[in-house]
Image (cartoon, helix red, strand yellow):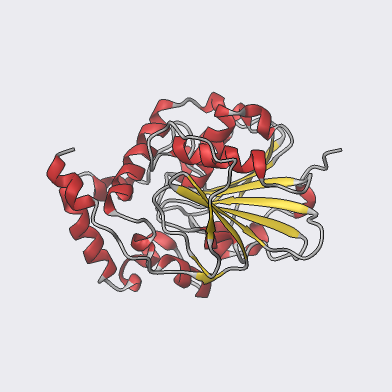
Length: 305
């Protein structure tokens, strides 16, 4: 990448979406982890890993039980979408040797989160899209941490997967230096112009979370690095690494204009038999935002003695 392109891409993007948050926010390298307050002793712990150009608010209305400890990752070089708490720098944070804005770097954030923060014995890790790839990579790096963890992979980036053909066609002629102009054009275009094509049927929550997606990262360079790394990671790994996911659910959308659904389904079949594959109906790439009915029951989380 040319130095001039890097300079253009490093221009800061102002945050465009926050929600009120009651809890603690920890800075972890170039990312963050937020732990929502819950009443009484936690019965379950859910760790949410957001997708490309999303933020951790993707999960806040999916898990509202007062006894659920909700822990939310903010991937590296993304804005932390909270208003309220002060950001803490915990002593348990370790140096992350992977390049920033990659699946591998964010997997290290997840690993440190799993090692230090859950207070209950019933743990679920739920990742959407790129977040699913982050979970798979974390399980590849530290498989023993996932031995008793319930995993939900929602429309996930998978080894040997592919972007949807429409997305590939759009991205093919885009050079690095064009990204600031493209993002500016997208942000000035009403979501209704392209939303139905890529996001499926809209509802109130989807409009809240997806309208300003291109303001989720701190700069344009993160957008480019995320995209290039997603494609490189899918190409690098074979589906055999999915064996590190011991139990859980993979949710396949009925219609996906972000990732190639048929390839996703074929790759998902490499998951071990303890992992269910659920082909959902009337859903887009954003399955649980379309309908909560597809969210696996908290009773599916294994009990650890």
